[in-house]
Image 1 (cartoon, rainbow, N blue to C red):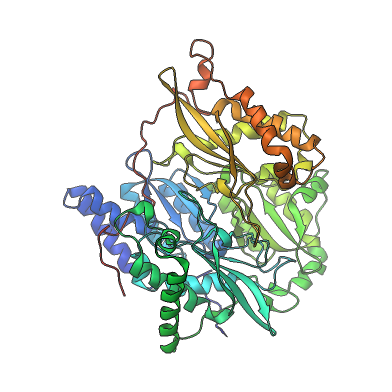
Image 2 (image 1 turned 90 degrees about the horizontal axis):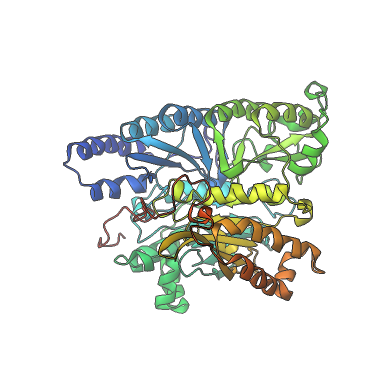
Amino acid sequence: MRISAMPRWAFQIPSCLANDLAEFKANVERFKAGTMSVEEFRAFRVPMGVYEQRESGTYMLRVRCPAGGVLPAQLRRLAHVSKSFGNGILHVTTRQELQVHRVPLDAIHPALESLRGAGLATKGGGGNTVRNITACPDCGVCPRELFDVAPFAVALTERLIADPVSFQLPRKYKIAFSGCASDCAGVTVQDLGFITRRKDGGDGFAVYVAGGMGAKSRVAVLLHDFVPAAEAFLVAEAVKRVFNQHGERKNKHLARLRFLVERIGFITFVELYQNQLAGLRAMNLAPLQTRAYPGNSQSAGASGPRNLKAAGQAGTLQAPVLPEFSIWRQCHVRPQKHPGFFIVELPLPLGDIEAGKMAALADVVAAHGDRLLCATQSQNLALRWIAESELAALHQKLKPLELAEPRPSVLRNLVACAGASTCRLGICLSRGLAKAITASLEASNLDLKKLGDLKIQISGCPNSCGRHPVADIGLHGAARRVEGRLVPHYSVLLGGRVAEGLTRFGAGADTLPAKNVPAFLQDFLAAFLQSAEAPDFHRFIDNGGRKTAEELAVRYRPVPALTADQSFYFDWDAQVPFSLEGRGPGECSAGGVPLAEPGR
């Protein structure tokens, strides 16, 4: 494995992007003129990371951020694009990406060109492509990791997206890296994933394959106990080639890699994979080249980036300590593995941040830590390499941006996808439910700190954008008829988790009307905290917790008649009665001709 020089940006965007954007501009004009059909335009734009939203004529741009890292200049450009071309609100996804919402058709090309000028790209943000490669949010600084996986996520991104075949696959191809068995990146529920190993003094990975969430969720299977770290590209490319040549191209509902493995069997899949791997090795391809991740790097020396040892000792960074500083520190500051330095989490309710605040945050990032902001799978942001002497000053700067509000972990970890507010697949307004749950728990008498890192995750439909199958408490939207009228409901799943060897999906407890979910959760969590198993939520679930949930659900299942209580027939945050108006085919798998022949 070779280490190359650090580039200007967090990762090198594809060299073909300029031509892609010129073609995008031409296709917009063709689409407007009626010489390109809706289907043809969709097939082109979705692999470019451009989705039409529920409000027809407006689009979402999904910006690729390998390992979640974004630099200050890129943050400023994102803020500019969101404010100038979108609705002025940036959104952090559960795949560590950043999204710009409600962009009009004529503004898409200027927005994409502006992003390109800051080393940012949306290509591969949607469609049947290699999607954003994720990593542990604390990679490089986590006390549990064997080594930093961020450089591998970046290097693998650059190798894979340079190949046109990576944008013509049977279905999406999701990859993740985790630094230890805790599997914070969710390797064991990805199409392909790598977990750090060390063998005979050498760094490498255990490799997992054919996992995934959504329809027929599946835990990934161990493919390799150990491969040298430099072979990560060969493994990913070999799996990609098998997927490309043998994956389903007619029925998108059976096209993910896990369905291929189920169809042909794991033994046959491994044989096909080993043949591809042997062929790649015979080609003597260049080994995977990693480099110091911008700002953060072990190769920057024991003192850390920008001589942080000196920064940590400098008195010039000291600031008066505000009264609420200690509460903030307790909630949002964690020690990293380097003595004297800290990880600071910036909570984003619903994963949103206003463009103006993002621009101001860019200045904060440029002045503190390793000058890198990291998006997390819990839809929050994080700073690393913050010295002890910087904490008070950092707290002062974050307060006016509303990024230093102390929140217990259960609320910081609460995840909700966009749901029916913008997504065409959404059934329920999942973000509205998230706000209702937050308000209910904050107003309760529960000691939320005792819930620890319990995760509540919400998806607006059975698809898993909110990662509900692996949450401690997962919820997904559904629609049911009561007296001939549609009523928003949520299916409740309990006991999901992610960790190497322990990953499992949540099992159903019941399906409840949306309006009763916050009260049900409040009573259920109260029962958990009063149980002998507390604070071990999974032991509680396995030793009577499911029965407790079922008994509580009987109370919260009924829906009153419309004449008795109209609110049940309205979703959370809705001003009109619940309906499925505006719902239609999703664009997650759009792009690529369904019957196209596979590439090489």
